[in-house]
Image 1 (cartoon, protein in one colour):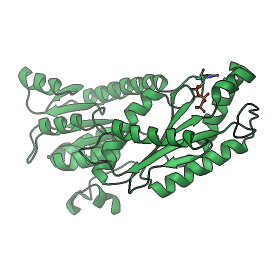
Image 2 (cartoon, rainbow, N blue to C red):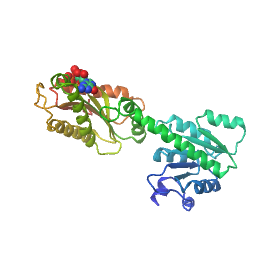
Image 3 (cartoon, rainbow, N blue to C red):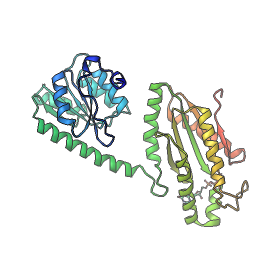
Image 4 (cartoon, protein in one colour):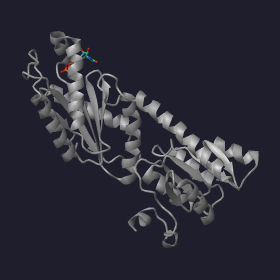
Length: 324
Ligand SMILES: Nc1nc2c(ncn2[C@@H]2O[C@H](COP(=O)(O)OP(=O)(O)OP(=O)(O)O)[C@@H](O)[C@H]2O)c(=O)[nH]1
């Protein structure tokens, strides 16, 4: 029952199919005010996909934000906000702009079709629709989306350390920033820099330097337990950490543990003046993102605290206090 309430559907919709709960299935959101269309489309797609239903634009936008579907089938003429307004709203939100949208509409002129495609839809199907054509088009678009996602993922991973790269950081931080702003939740960011890494390379050689980078990256990654926590290689020996929905105290504790545990790896570093072993310095800050703030300025604050950690002797965490 909770799921029905969460999706914002009214009790009279309860008899309609809602989810096929199978984690490996693609999720398709159908937004259509006509109950018969919803029923017919979900019957068509249910065997192969997880189907979510919305009976108007507002519900559809809520479900899109909450469930991040792989594809949206969108009606044009609906009471309240129409399909054109829905797609504009989807495309203006970082968290939903990449979801492919197919219009399914009784507006059949080429002008209507052009408007839909110009607004960013990947396809336009006219009503009455032919079930096998809908199935085939949905399948093709999902396949294309999967290939696109795969290529994007490859382009977002650092080949040396196999954690995310800076490009991923730039994409993720924008999404997380707007999600935390929308949900009024705290976001913590940390920047990690390996201490005296130039002299490590000089003493042990670049290959050992590469191995140390791999080890530190995978060691830190293992300690980030929540599904949306991210480590990304930001530059040479610098890693950025994104911790959504995490307050300053939890984030600082986590990074302090990481800082200690890197030294405890006991990677020999003879020319370090602060330890026998390889160590890291960490700068961090936490905030509830507001509309008038931006993540680039926030990262500067994080950087300043990394600088302080270095200046105060390295192998430590400096976190922005909330009163600062
Ligand atoms: N082996 C290896 N070294 C790298 C890589 N990327 C960056 N580095 C090295 O990391 C070193 C960073 O040196 P610096 O920026 O001077 O900083 P540092 O020596 O760590 O000194 P502090 O940060 O002040 O503690 C440089 O010597 C880079 O060549 C990499 O992919 N592999």
